Amino acid sequence: MQTETYTSNEQHGPQYDQSNDRYTFQYDADGSATLPTRIVHALAAVADIDVSQGEFSLYDSIDPDALERIFSPKADGSKRSSGHVAFTALEHEVYVYADGTVFIYPPVDAPRPTRTIEQEH
Image (cartoon, rainbow, N blue to C red; front, side, top):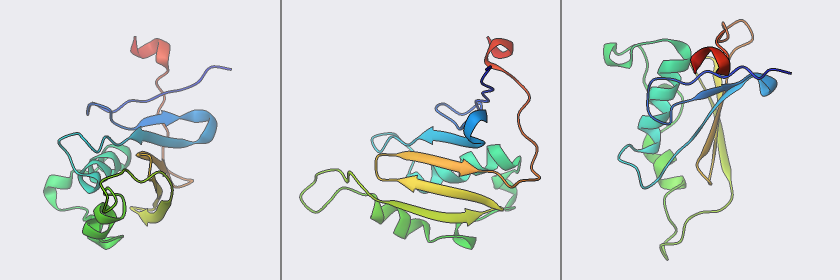
């Protein structure tokens, strides 16, 4: 079986996992972007919207500050190793895990990527 993969132009952007019908990316807490910012840009890429035009605000779905606090290091400085949060944004189901994994499930009627790994390389 050939796996279809889509990668956004953003470094470490969402990749489409055809076998599970979801987009996925790994959030790096040591990176320059915050978790809410990465989610907004991933959703924008997946839903094909321009966030700079004010078409979408994460506040419409979840409190970004609370999301950031939930997955920030514990009081003793250690990283969180378990737990997840799920919410709906732009009709996409978003699952954020403590290990930095983020899954975005598109709506049933949303178009899916048509490029394959072989076509991109």
